[in-house]
Image 1: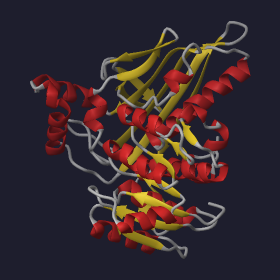
Image 2 (image 1 turned 45 degrees about the vertical axis):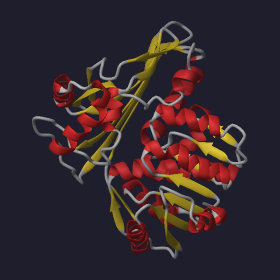
Image 3 (image 1 turned 90 degrees about the horizontal axis):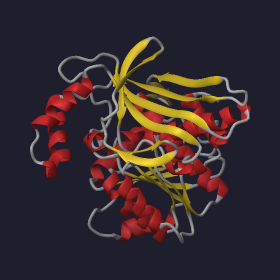
Image 4 (image 1 turned 180 degrees about the vertical axis):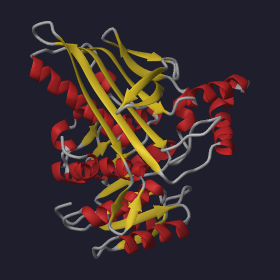
Length: 380
């Protein structure tokens, strides 16, 4: 941030922590940060954690974010704020976006939930402030990167269409053990959802919807084998933006070999389709451990023929490890998710955009080289 702003963060989990610390430590002019959570003690704990972790002087104010009513304290905070970073579960996103519109707060969220995103798009049509939706890692950074390599490929080879645009992300442990070959490196909320809800893709140049976990394959990245499969939400708005320009487009989640077979086994044993997401999440929480040591694997590729008919392929691959910010070591999932979220809010505050901005509408090269993002992902 190059100007002083009042930034409200909704939530007090790992991503909210990271967003607050990144704002405090990496901003040119440190903002005033408000941390809101339904449990005030947790908001106070996070505020103290950020204070102890930054090397800069920063005012961090915790407050009670009620889930039932709009309190006088909430009104005071929202009225002072310039922006709202929504780090709450996706089901609450429309409610937070409603606060942003009502109190004229620029808004950015992280959710991959499609229905909630559509609700916010309707809500924000006539807003006086800006909204960047589905920012973070996936959806988020990976979609901007995919759009960037598509644009660069078309410019370099003087074409308007390509055959394939594929992009994949894995939030993974370094090691994996049977039977699940997985470890939670972030909030488990949403993992079961993305395994079950349908996925939006492009097939034969047209937007389509197909089942999650229906196109499994093996991919080798930097000499290491991973499983990949379709999961919901990660494609953001690219299937709409690039229909007619890409023959095949999809987002897949990377996992260690063996994990998706374990998921298939669990799903076959679950009988009640109405509670499938909740039941799978319960099994995963009971079986899969939470682990601190993590890594983020990112892969994107574009393939097609150049103007002379020669088949070309461009790839981007990254392996991002935990990173020290200020005095704290943040997990890779924290920095890779929080940095694009903070970059989105900076973009909104500096450009004074109104209404919705989706991933395909960001100026990709400028965004990817933003001050917050390039500290985590490197420069493109």
